[in-house]
Length: 140
Image 1 (cartoon, rainbow, N blue to C red):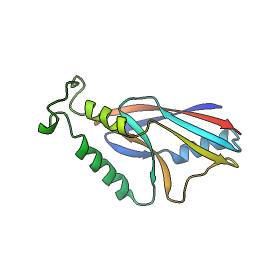
Image 2 (image 1 turned 30 degrees about the vertical axis):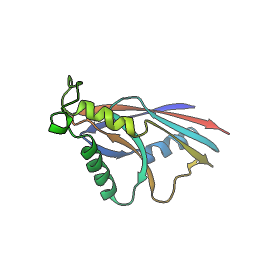
Image 3 (image 1 turned 45 degrees about the vertical axis):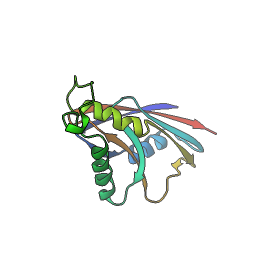
């Protein structure tokens, strides 16, 4: 079974999609199996991360900005890809170190995430975007 989520983003942020994925699994009548989630873009990522303390997402984004600041930062002078603005190539770098797909076990129709885990789309660009996330459920 396959599906799709569409998210509107407005700058760098961690957008939790756990609830939308859980609703989709309920809608399709999922039982035991695995759900694979894949983001169909090259400048954002997916991540399983803590969903209890929003400081975790804040600190994650701050860390990503430290390792890949905007292309107009003096430390990034080596970057050549700048056609779409100073955030574009750093967004690709961030997406290169974070996953773009995840596979999560499903038992009795529920994702087997840990108590404090959530699934996030991590937006790396500063401009608003509409992001497509492909979902696939495979029964066991």
